[in-house]
Image (cartoon, rainbow, N blue to C red; front, side, top):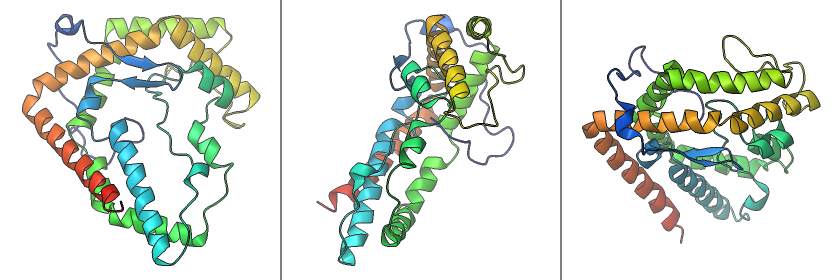
Length: 263
């Protein structure tokens, strides 16, 4: 899950992590894609913000947009020139060395999108129409539920744990050795805010952060801990997890319905 947290009442997010015995979940690990910078975690199976939901959302958007254009006798959008990618999971900072050395602190799809041809006025109109047609589904995806609660509560638990603190400290020590200065509040390296995210200095900073996160083993440790806390919290909230899984299935079916209606 990436992106800002939807609006929510204070205290409505946190789940109780007291008394969780991670030893019971020692076999639970995160599957990391070090090239893409993405992690497969227990929450993926029930989350409304999972990669498979995102893929269906993107395809449904394209189907509705092209259908709108055809009604006006216009050609489909050249989607091959558009970028819709799953973002790197920077929950604990950057850790894809290949992305860092190419894009620095920038998000790859936003950089790529800035280099392609702009949408025509008709394409923008139909993109807006597609978004309006999916409004209820998009609101459902963004609504605060157990998935956001598990996501944030597991993150807080990892950062507060002795093993999590040790992993972050090891990565930070490595970054310091490479000449980076660590921000005391965020725990991430300071960067040059006056220049672009993919400037030479920020690429160097991002590359050092990613390299240290990987070479110290910190990123694997942090995501493994996250996976274990997520699994434990899902088990603790079994009824809500089942309901969320059913909601996810309904969302996927709704998006598939949009896509298949055009075939």
